[in-house]
Amino acid sequence: MTIAEQRLDSPAPAARARVDWLPYALLLPTLLFLAVFFVYPMIQAVVLSVRDPSGGLTLRYFQAMVTDTYFRGAVRNSLLLTAIVIPLQVTLALAIALLVNTRFRGHQWFLYICAIPLGISDLAAGLVWLSIFTDRGTLNMLLLWLGVIDQPIAFLSFEEPVWLYAAIVATEVWRATAIVMVILVAGLQLIPKDYFETADVFGATGWRKLWHVTLPLMRPALQTALIIRTILAFQLFATVIALAGRIVPVLAGEAYFQYSLYRNPPVASAYAVLIMATSMVITVAYLRLLRGRETEAGA
Amino acid sequence: MSAAARRALLALAVTGVGAWVLAPIVLIALASFTTRSQLYAWPRGVIPNPWSVETLRFFLQAQGVLQATWHSLVVAGLTIALAILIGAPAGYALSRFRFAGREAFRLAILGTKMFPATILAVPLAVSFIHWGLYDTLLGVAFVHTALALPFAIIITTSVFVGVPFELEEAAMTLGCGRLQAFLRVALPIALPGLAAAAIFTFVLSWNEVFAATILTLRTRTLPALVMNAVGSAGAPADFRFAAGFFMIVPALIIIMVIRRYLLTLWGVTVR
Image (cartoon, rainbow over all chains, first blue to last red; front, side, top):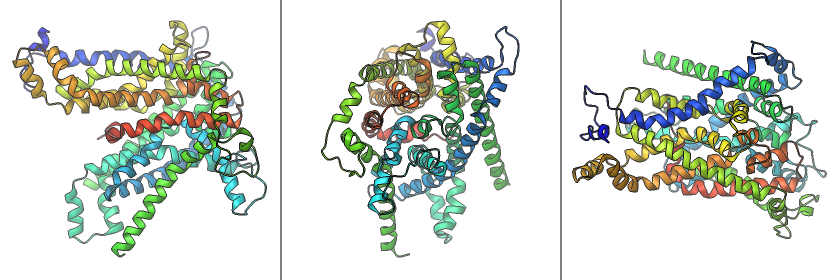
């Protein structure tokens, strides 16, 4: 405990000639663990996808991935679902966050209820909505009750691509709007009240206040929410498999099938690398895009 | 818009959103208490007639389900222990010390929070075969710990920030060592917050599908078993509904328990 005892005085950032090793010692287990179970597998994913059995470089696994029957569909579906789902989630999450922020009586409970899906896995959410969209599901019963149909519609089949998409989108919006919402609520709470009061003094109301005051101040929170949600959108797999099987292939789902069904780790790794690269590109793009505008606004 | 109209609109929006979140949960619960023959009938009512535990019992008695549930609990327990033991010291360091590299470490933690299981699972499966960890509960727990660690660090940091350092200092002036002061003074005050971190870790591990599916073959966790039944074994509808319901029940209870920490855990903004 000799090292520890030297810094009994205070946690304040005092200029000190000696380096205090205690914080580094406390971080060491985390760094070691993440090195083995986080950094190493990320590198390993790249290695697995480009090394041939004799140890040389090869692109054959990427070629196998690109020429696979499901590849084009998987890329298209992953991109399209992301492009449909995220704007819906952000709009809805923003609406919920603004509702919570009006601080009506019971707004805490409203927040908790809206946060419930945070605790529900993608697989469970897929199964929950399967009970709605399946042939003998709630939606068919509702349509029958309304007199729209007399025989059930097979929403989740080959012949109904639009319905399949709608079911996946509905499930994803239901399941993952909560994470965006929580980030936005936290971001809203960081905005000092004075800004809104000033806006009131100058007579800004409703939409103008939202557009010119609230949204610009929420830019950091929106940025974080967009990055996290977009990266998670490319992990999408269990929801889709629960609802559509492999009729709607997605990137993460193909990694799963390549590994579990075909026992082909290198090609599964190629998919993992593709997902990783896409996530990184998107993160950088968001940071550039949103920060760029911030500087403009500041200039 | 008049104040009354505004209030009515607010009430309408709140009720609408609340119903949208809750309705699917109610519907899957109802489906889980409907008999199998009723589930396949056309037309059928939404309310079970008769109410029955047949569907849930069918799921629980299906081969491997109870064992997989046990496996899930073991993995979650191991993950909680690992994540807290490894993460809490880091959280304590972040809350108590200013040191060179602190910001870099915080950013790295936020970065790891953003790259989940899909990327890690496949390469780790290959390594785990060499390391003798493939198809073991410990192997799954390691991956879950890697996923839970950033959250464990974020929440323990905020927990220890809430425990005044002056209390530890006071204990040290009274003759406690650094470690003793922590164990006797800071730790007891921090326990409820650490419990929340543990519970959150449980949810993460209980819900994790991809890594558990890839890293196990016979030693399945519950999500891995259900994923396999749904994805390749063609499980019947009643099995699927009961599985969905069974998997979300713990999560529902837990979200209510840790609701105070929701914003701390997820609402982190990169600045």
